[in-house]
Every structure is written in C-alpha cells, then in structure tokens.
Amino acid sequence: MRKPLPAGRLALFHALLLSAVFAFWYVMTEPGLIPPFFFEDANQAKFFFGQPGQVLARIWDWFAGGKIYVHLWITLVETMLAFVIGTLLGLGVGLWLALSPTASALADPYIKAMNAMPRVILAPIFAVWFGLGILSKVALGVTLVFFIVFFNVYQGVKEVSPVVLNNARMLGAGSRQLLRTVYVPSAMSWVFSSLHTSVGMAFVGAVVGEYLGSARGVGYLILQAEGAFDINTVFAGILVLTAFALALDALVSFAERRLLVWRPAQGETERL
Amino acid sequence: MSAPALALSNITVTFVAADAEGKTYTAVSDTTLTVGAGEFVSVVGPTGCGKSTLLNVAAGLLEASAGEVRALGETLTGINGEAGYMFQSDALLPWLSAFDNVALGLRYRGVAETAIRERVEAWLARVGLAAHGNRYPHQLSGGMKKRVALAQMLILDPKILLMDEPFSALDVQTRQLMENELLELWSADRKSVVFITHDLEEAIALSDRVVVLSAGPATRPIGEFAIDLPRPRDVAEIRMTPRFVQLHAEIWRTMKDEVLKGYAQGQRT
Image 1 (cartoon, rainbow over the protein chains, first blue to last red):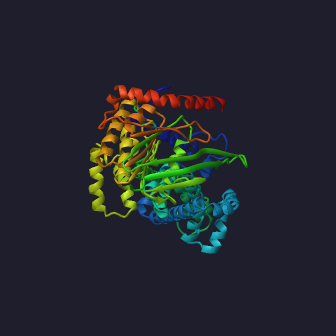
Image 2 (cartoon, each protein chain N blue to C red):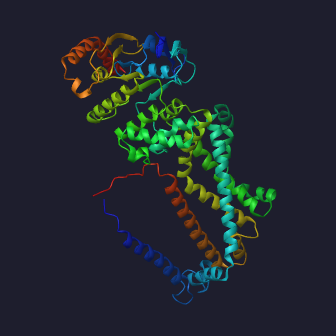
C-alpha cells in the first residue's frame, strides 16, 4: 500500500482542488470568456449555473449585512430540537421495546412499516397540524431522527454481554439499577455511533420543512430565491448550509471523543 | 456444627433445546456438593462437562430443574446474595473506570460516596492498582482486569466466593502470580470458595478439597480428594513437593477416563 500524504501537503491539495472547481465554474459561466459551445447565448450558462463571484458576494452580503443570522438561528434551533426530542423518544421507546418482549412482538410490523415509509412525505401533514412555524419542521426532523436512534438503542440493548449483565446482577443490581448502569450505557454507545447520521437527519428535516413552506430559515431563503430565478442566491444558500452541516459534524465528533473515552479506538497500534 | 456455607443437594439441570422441540439436554445430574465454612473447594472436570452450569445454579443465576441450594442454611431463591462471582471471561463494565467498577456493588447498595471512595482506594491498593483507578478496562492488561474483578467481588465482603475458571485466559506466569495473590487474600479472612477449573494442578495447589466431575452429559461428581498440603502455600513451589505429585497421580487416575470420554465426544460432534 502507498503511504498516505503528510497532513500539511494534504491540506494544500484540498485547497487546490476546491480552487480548481471554483476556477472551472468561473471559466464556464463568465459571459464572453470562452465562446458558448452548448448554449446559444453567452449569458445562458450564467443563468443556469450562477457565477462563483456573485455567489461569494451574496454570502459576504449576508454575513456582513447580518441578514443571514436570524435564518441560521432558526434552522439551528429546529435541528437541535428535532435531534434532542427524536433522540429522547428513540431512547425511551427503544429501551421499552427491547426489554419487553410482548410489546416488541406487538409493535414489530408497525415499526417496520413506519420505517419503510418515505417519511419526508409527512411534511405537508405536519404543516397542516403545526402551522408554518418551527414546530412542523421539528416534527419532521423528529420522525427522521427517531428511527435511527430507536433501532440503535434496540440493537444496543440486545447486544449487552450476558456476562456483564450477570456480573451486575451478582453485585446486587436491582432492575432499575441494571437499566441505569448496564442497558442505558450500552445503548448509548450505539446511539453515539449513529450520532453523525441522526444530526444529519435532523438537519435534513429542518431544511426540507423550511423549503416546503416557512417564513424563516435558510431553506426559506433558498425557496424565495428560486421563485425569483436568482440562481446565485440558491447556490449561496447551499454553500452556507454545507458549511453549517460541516460545523455540526465537527461538533458531533468532538462530543463523541469526550463521551466515548471508555471505548477502545479502532486500530490503536502505531505503525513504525 | 453450624450449617455449611453452601449446600447443593441432588441438583439436576436439564435444558430444553431451542431449535428442536421436545429435545432436552441434561447438563448436570443428581449432584450433591457441600462446602464448609472457610473451605476452599475446587471442582475439576473435562471441558464442557457442565461445571459452569453447576456454579450458575449455586449463584442463583440459573434455576435447577430439580434439587435444592442452601446458602448459609437458607434455601436459595433468586440471586445468591451471600456469594461473589468471578467470571471466566471479561465481566467488567467497559464504560466504567477501574475505580467505578470496584465501587459498583457498593453504589448498588446505596453506601455513602465518601465511604465508597475510602474503601475502593483501599481495595485498589490491595490488588496493586492504586495508580490505575481512572483507567478503563480496555486500557488494562489481562492480569490487571482480573485484579479489578477480584477487588470488585471482594469489596462486598461476600461469605462465599464462586470462581469460574477465573485465570484460564492468563499466561502461565501471570496466572501463578494471581493464584498466590488469591490465596493471600483468602487466607486473611477464610471465605468459603468454590473454584471451577479444568486444570488439576491449579486445583490441587489452591484447595482443601478437590471434587472430580464426570464427562458430560449428565455430569455428576465421581470422586472427592482431601488435599492435606500445608498452608501457606506458594503455588509454583508446591508443585515440586512429593506429596503434590502423589496427590496428582491419585486424582488423575480417576479423572483420566473422563477426560478421554470428553475428548471423544468433542471429536464426534
């Protein structure tokens, strides 16, 4: 196997790759720079694909003018609420079903059906139920997050080592103490391993909800710009969302490192 | 004389096979075993003969199909609260540090946190892990994990110790160190011990009495031998004494046929 690149060099290449993409974008969309070869008019490429300069200028306007913050804040609140509520529900229901065979047998086909259903389609119903404010977006995010957490908790409880369980029982654990010291920590390690996916899903719920009908949020900005064929703003919104998602992901990685110190890292050996 | 620490009378354990209906497997058959107060009893037998099953019955983790278990004279229902159990494989809670693992039993009993700190630190020091309290199980070596498990069990001061091949996963040197350590801790207050092992030498070196089990299925005791070696013992040195060799030869004569039987069964399945 080839050796991986050193970190510094890798970062440089990352930056170069990104610049190359933007340069390509610029060359292909700047009117009059190269003769049009696909569109009939030199201005059409710019209409469909936007222009990197304009997109970056729009992002700058947003942040410098302060217009974006309220929208970002709303999206963040929706994401966080969906994530927290979905995780708590998934944890509760997962623990309950995993520890109660009757309830689990009864609920099994419905859980499967609800998981198989494309749940994004619930967004219009939530809009009717909860209105166009934050709540309908949170509800959508919760349905997305719930199932990820639920299945992981269920698995986590089922995979508790019987030896560890017996040990705790021999040390005198009652059933509530078993739940607190054995089942929940074991389930939590599975929940944390799915944290990246569930935060991502909460984010998807928020943005899709906003896009389908709202008065605030980054999804709303994109929807509005699209209505006016302002493709530059659409791209600006997408870039902001991407950066935002990356920031959330980094936060999750940080939390994961802090909370799962007890777990052996993958491949802890060092190659000499 | 007071009641024995642990008395298993006419224990039979029959499992119902999960895959084939109506099929049963009798792991232990009509076994009677008594452990006196302060006695160290080893139970040896070929692999897969149902030794662990017997121990789980004594611990109350498994209900016998027939027979009765008495702990300190009381008939056992549910978990045996008088007993501490040391498992063959890793039984430490991986999400708790060594300190919290040792503290676990006391926390279950609602002991005050200041008292816990003091007692846990004393026990960690006693098993030579005073400096490693904040490490997690995956950061400890095999021998260190066993020490934590030992402290975890002994801190609750159980009257009966049930040990299921606790050192079988360790290398020979670490194992002898642990065996000596166990004997030293045990001699301090002489608890009653049931020590399961497949290693006859380990059994003789540690015990007051060795019980030999037959090969499975339907395991039952087929011989009992009093070990009259003087204490305190050093498990490495005692193996060289003539009396040890003599006892070993004597017990091995009883055990040999069963081991061969167990081996033959292992070949067939």
